[in-house]
Amino acid sequence: MQGQERLILANLYLHNLPPGAQTIGQVQISYDHPGYGENLLSPVFPLILTVQSTYQAAPTPKAQQAVLALGKYRQTQMAEIKLQQGDRNSAATLLQSAAHTARQMGDTQAATVLQNNATRLQTGGNLSDSDRKKTRIVAKTTLQ
Image (cartoon, rainbow, N blue to C red; front, side, top):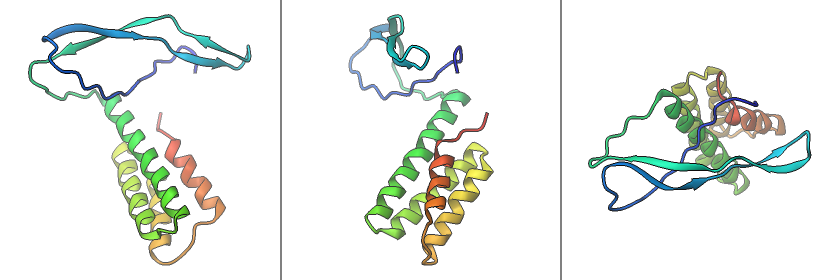
């Protein structure tokens, strides 16, 4: 994945900044390099925001897909936790939500796996280890 663009999602709550470009800090990425077996650091980059006097959401398609992928992942994580707690109804509801999110992303295979698992839970069935593994895999998968 070297040389590919990465998208970072962050919620920032800042007050009383004047409209226009504002530098609010710096960012440096720490990452593992498998070939060297050590932790490496990126160069330091300024963190520059374009402040608007009135908030107007305008997510790019790439950002929208990233938000949906994060939502799908979190919904399946929460479903796993609910299953561990024995709350099958909540787990099924969360898996249905994740299936809907996958459909919004255009990922019909993930939506099918997630919906089938939700239906299995709703009808009193159990999820096998294989079902849980498939759920974790589709939760992390995005279409290229």
